Image 1 (cartoon, chains in turn orange, green, brown, yellow):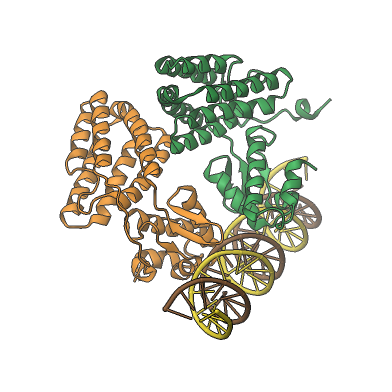
Image 2 (spheres, rainbow over the protein chains, first blue to last red):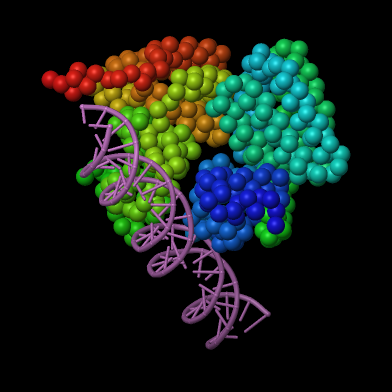
Length: 238
Length: 238
DNA sequence: GTGCTTAATATTGTATACATGATTAGCCGA
DNA sequence: TCGGCTAATCATGTATACAATATTAAGCAC
C-alpha cells in the first residue's frame, strides 16, 4: 500500500478528518496533474471511495472541489471525468498566465531574497534531474510547483492561488496537446529567470517570462488522444 | 415568500435538481454580495435547509462552493459564517483587480461593439437609479455586475470568472471597511469608461480603470477592528 | 444481421440516522 | 459574585439507505 493510502486510511483518532480529506484531495489532484489520471478518464464515486476507504460522501465533496478548479468535469447523473480542455480553454489559460505571471515579475524581483532564490534554484535542479531520469510525471508537477512558488513570492495570496489553478490546468493542457518528450518548460529557462530576479531586473524577468510562456504555448499541437480505463488500484497504490 | 424561495421550493417535476441548487446558490450569494447577510453572520445548515426546503446535504454542497469562493468561511465543527476579510486580503484583492481588470481594458476596447456598449450603458443607468432611490444593496450588486460584464467582453472566460470572484469579495470588503453612503464606484465613472472603450482608446481606458479602482480602495478606512470591550449600555440602551 | 423495445444492472442524487465534538446552562463552592 | 465543574443541548461530520436516472444487455420482429 502506498504512503498516501496508508495515511488516508488511518482512523480519525490519529488523523483529523479534515486532514484526511486534504490528503485524499491532494492524492487525486496530483494524479491528475502528473497525468497518471489522463484527461477523459472516468472517476467513479464507488471506486474512489473504496480505494481511499471512505464513504461516497467524502469523495463527492472532493470531486466537487476538483470540479470548481476545473480539473474534473461533473456531468449531471453521468459522473465525473478528468477534464479534457478545449483549444479555446487552452488559449484562455495561457493568455491569463501571460497577464498575471508576467505582471507579477517586477514585484517578485523587488521582494526576492537569497533564501528564496536558493529555494527556487533547488526546485529547478530537481526538475532537471527528474527530466534526466525519465520521471516525466514528476517533472511536470515540479515545473508547475516552480511557477506557483514564484507567484507566491509576490506576496499576493489571491493571485498566487489563481496562478496555482492556472498551472494545474496547464498540466492538463500539456497532457492533451503537448508532444511526448518535449514537456513545457525548457531545461534551463527557470534558472535564467532566477538570475534576472536576483539581479532585481524586474522588466527583464517579465519579458523572459513572456517568452517562456509563449514558447510553451507554441510547442502545443492540437491533436486528440484516445482514452483508456484507469486502473485506480495501480495508480493510487499498492 | 420571495420569488427565489418559491422557485427553489418547486418540486423536481418542474425544476431540475441542479437548477434548484443553482437558484439557491445564487440566492445566498446575492444576499452576501448585497450585504443583506453581513460579514460574520452565522449560516446554520439546519436553518438554511428549512428556508429552502431541501436537506442539509444540498446546503452543505452550496456552502462548500461559497467557501471555495471565499464568500463564507468554514470552520471545522463550528459551522459557516459570512467571511470577514482582513486588511491584508483586501489589499490582495484590489492589487489583483489592478493587474487583471486594467490589463483587460485594451482587449475589451478592441472587441467592444455598439450592442455591448449599449448594454453597459444600461447597466450603468440602472446602477445610478438604484443609488438615487436609496437601494444601496442593489446598487452594490449592479456595480459588481458591471465590472464582471466588462471582463467578459475580453472574451477570456477564465479571467472573467476570476474577476467575478474578485468583485464578490470586494463587496464584502466594502461592507467591512467602506463608509456608509459612499459606496465604491463614483456615479459617472462607469459612463466615462464606456466612452473611452467605444472610442477604442484602450490605454486611456486602462489608465481610467486604474484610477477608478484606486479611488475605491482609497475610500476604505483600513482600520482593523480592535477587540475592545463594547459599551453595551451605549449599543443597546435607549 | 440490423434495428427497435423492454428488462436488468449500474451509478449518481438526495434524505436521513447516528456519532462526535462544541456550546450552553445549571450547580456548587469559595 | 465570580470561577470552575458537570450535564444537557445543539450543530456538524460521516455513513448508509433508498430513489431516480443512465447505461447496458436481451429478446424479438423484420
